[in-house]
Image (cartoon, rainbow, N blue to C red; front, side):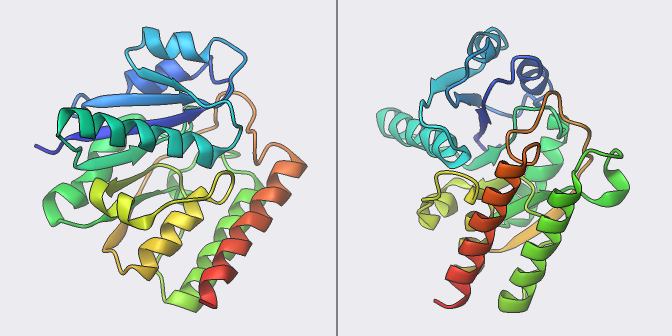
Amino acid sequence: MSAIKVIIPAYNEEESIANVINDIPSIVNEVIVVSNNSTDTTEQRAKDAGATVLMEPRKGYGYACLKGMEYIAQQSKELDKKPDIIVFLDGDYSDYPEQLSELVEPIEKQGLDFVIGARVKRLRKQGSMTPQQIFGNWLATFLMKLFFNASFTDLGPFRAIKYDKLLGLNMEDKTYGWTVEMQLKALKQKLSYTEIPMKYRNRIGVSKVSGTVKGSVMAGVKILGWIFKYSFK
């Protein structure tokens, strides 16, 4: 059986974080919640639900993910044992954590390197993705198909990747470009990948990215910047 660890970046998700943790299947060895400078009770609720809680004071989705990876690297060194699969999952309860078993199956049974949980229209609750999210996903994946012949349809944050392949990507984005950077580098390094259709619901609370004009614009700029950077390398 694969050793699986989950990294959950979380900023002020006190209303949802315990639900997320409690719905994660028991096949997971450790759930790591990275509090991205939360000012509410996110950290305590995550601890009470059984997660390992880390603090990352620098705001940014990528900063939180990198903090989780640093912790895993240090733990692997100390214990002389590495995980097989890393899963990234948001803390807002918009994804269905119980589908994690489906997400990792192509890695465990087919040997694939990377799996995206795709938020397909037929499985999405109405209003769960904003128009700017839908358009941004379409544009980014269209450009990846145009430049790299990729088959991605989504930049969904619910994703699984072999740990050694993740390390090989040398992830660096600190904010909004984390998901697209991972997909672009996976394409560049010719990792084997697939998408699994996933259910998606309205998040608990307000989105820190798509819920604001500034967040949407900044995310769009960052995503397009990564795509054009890699397209002309």
